[in-house]
Image (cartoon, rainbow, N blue to C red; front, side):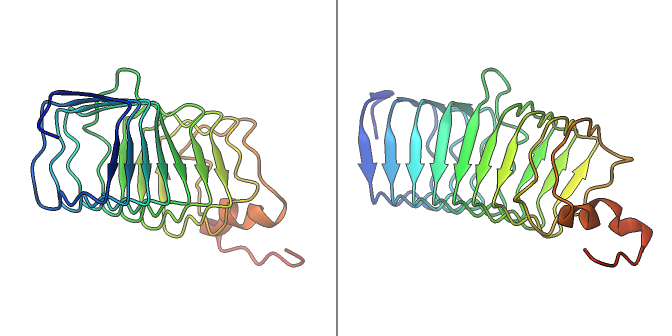
Length: 192
């Protein structure tokens, strides 16, 4: 990875844990089973890239560009996405673990989270409008000052979302999911 520009390459089983990788541009690259645990990949650009079964826990992403990046089966524990470049920021998560991750002040409209475990994460002042949380576990995940309009939570589980602290017009829930919206009131809901 010493070159500055990488196009249409596959990187497999590379261990970059605890290392720094800066000033690189990756276009249509695939990373398979790579270890970026506690790495600093700040200042890089990833465009139309896919990360498959990679460990990106505690990775540093300051001024990193993530443009149409797909994460499949990845471990992204404790990742702060807040300092990622906003310009053309677009990500998709499939079967990922995003525990203790933070998304603050991000525009993530139409983001797809599919079969993810997202425990103790924070979404603060995030535009998630029209996003989908398909078969996701959201234990202790915070949603505050978010735009959740038209977000699909119908198959999500274990969420607690305060409708008074978020924009939620036309968000989608099942009847069983209503408990996660009124939980703060301590109501005894029978039949749900």
